[in-house]
Amino acid sequence: MKLKAFRIAIIVAVFFISGFLCLSMVSALGSNEATASVRWSKTSPSPGETVTITLSFENKLQKQIQVARIGINADWMPPDSAGNPVFAGPQYTSNPVTVAAGDTFTSETFSLTIPSTAKAGIYTYYIAVDGYDSTGAGFSWDSQRYSITLGNSNTASSTPGPSATNSDTNTNNPQIDTLTLIAAITITGVIAVIVVALFMSRRKGQPATPATNNQTWPPAPPKEEPSESQQNFDI
Image (cartoon, rainbow, N blue to C red; front, side, top):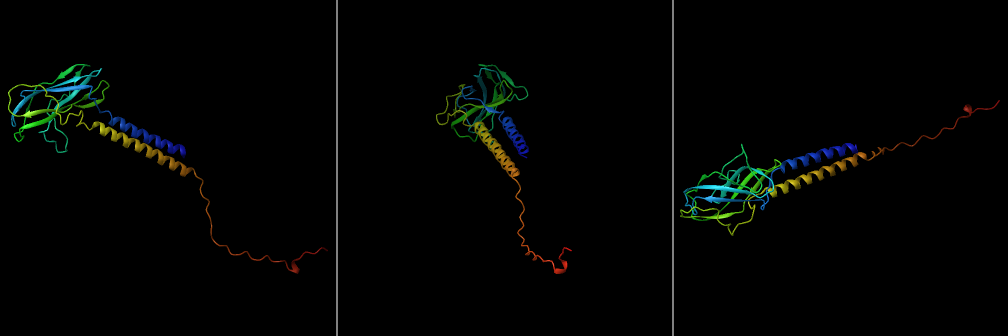
């Protein structure tokens, strides 16, 4: 019984660990392993205006990677119905772009319309990249936040300096926290399964308690002495 319980525990533990490994295939690329920049057609575009943008992504790893999606998210872009950030940019999911170690990938130029409801002022934005590393595992990377002013200007500009109010790298990348939560749940589940298996095996290994009978028995009848007629005599 003990062996069977341990086999069940091992099978369940392997299941939990395999699930964690599958979920952790998508990981966060380190902040020092890549950089990104944006080239705007105007330094300070006006609300309601359409500008052109080009995104650049530099691979600082010592191995090649593939880019499947690259996009920009700005403060004026509302999230989708599920609360997830929305990005503007090209996708290469059907044919990922290979970026060699130390090389820079530059996307094609695309258009971005700033909503007319946006007010003039300073906004922040960041660049997000999804792709695959040299082993085929997926990665997700967010740049630090940069700032841009919505106003009037006709001068082309590259990415401005980072905003002093929010320049932490991967501020909007919940991937690390998600993996930590998945790891905690997986470890907790494995420990719980092993504890239950040990408890069940100990319970099954204990000898059964003998049944007790607490019924009161009547007193035994007195032993009858044989009568004289029943006594044996020697002749």
